[in-house]
Image (cartoon, rainbow, N blue to C red; front, side, top):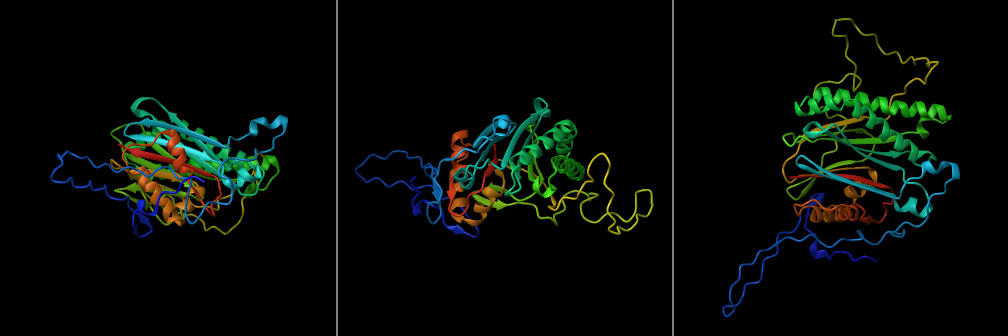
Amino acid sequence: MPPVPPAEALPSTTGGFRTPPSAAVPEEPSADEPREAVLSVVEPPPPAGHVGSGPPTYHPEPTALPSVEPDELGDLVADTVLDGARYGTSTLRAASVRGDSARYRGEPRRDALLTARFGTGEGALVLVAMATGARATSGAHRAAAEACRWIGQAVGRSHERLADDIRAARRGELKSGLHRLTDRSLGKLRASAAEQGVEPEEYTAGLRCLLLPADPQCRTRVFFGVGAGGLFRLRDGAWQDIEPRVADTIGEAVVGFGSPPHETPEGDRLTMDLGITTPPSPYEPAPRPSHAPFRFRASVARPGDTLLLCTGGLAEPLRGEPELSDYLTTRWSAGEPPGLATFLADASVRVKGYADDRTAAAVWEA
């Protein structure tokens, strides 16, 4: 069993999250010994295999591979994917790991991860997209991969306009535009479900995205998406849960988000929604509204911040197990971003009772 950091190495409790320990004070030399200049350095704790009350039930390493047919090798999903980059003032680390439960049962990873750069130079835009397929459905991994691909294509085609809006802080335009792109992407999933002859609820995915401009003069970071997960910020040694609430309104009003306007800009009154369903198109299935609300947040990063976007597999234990937030605080407060292998180890620290896939993207600000 991997060693667990001693209790005294963990910081004290301050509300739901705890801050890292202060630097150790060097011992005072005796009067007979020559005095030397001593530099105290806060060292992160050694990597841990798990935190919490005890080790998880499942084995810590992959066991069973998913079963696959010879003609369906393209459907295979790797147990773990890892990526990273550095643009402008930000350093990105991203990973997606199959959960303990899926590893034990030989099921594919339901989480999908996409990292992509559109454009060149300071005008480039980096997209991180992560999706989680519906639980207990055979095509969950395919739906998640499709959701990432559709939103990636949509953002890629509009990346110049999006990058301009981010630099100009046009939050209203960003929110409405990204809401529209998200709806279209999830609408394609519903169309794909109809083609396969399955219910839309069986071929769907939660989708969470982060936009990072490459321009070093622009520190605006944009989150948008639909579905469960978490958005956290490590600032001044303490975690902040900044997941936008449904009622949060950032920017101007958006048509289609909340109540519709009473009249058009030209002054024409809009009719009341009587609950009459739109007849299905003979060419494609009628779009169905997403049951999960659209979420959006645009925030300005500060030097030293670490922004963490993740699916429910990491968000739930981070909110529910204080030792995990403590551990990541001490590991990620050293200043320098971790290497890829170190980030993977940190993001994979296990907690008893949480066995879902984990997908996480963290951004360190210089």
